[in-house]
Image (cartoon, rainbow, N blue to C red; front, side):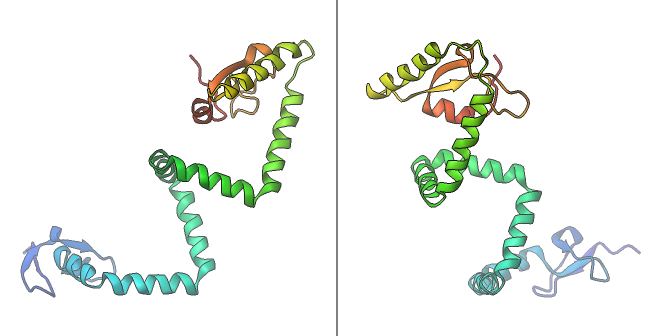
Length: 190
């Protein structure tokens, strides 16, 4: 005869196996407590469990760091979406966070700036009209002084993943700061 009911070790009520979490270490393959009783136990012990977890994190910082890194690696897409959601809800915090990071890491900021300058030099063809290019940057400066936050953007990015553009007059456009930041290093084909 096939057994379809199992008694809960806590509430003593016989319930369907679907009411129990699986546990491969058990003889029957299910936890002794039903899901409802497990939920109740967890909610009662919430503060104790949080304190225990916090103490473990403090005692094992290297293991915690390793665990977090592995989890982020396995859940890259989820982390990216969570970050985008947070940044959309907290634009001021995002800006302040980036400002603090730049202040704390001037060497990394300088290195990124130098990489971009080097890429720009390598991506500037001999036939590029430097007068027009400088004019675009001057135009952006004039708009900024007038209160319009416009930036010069490379339509095809200089350091894109799939394609790299040139630093020339035909590859430049004026974009708002937010549009340029959201575009990142991507080529948005029309």
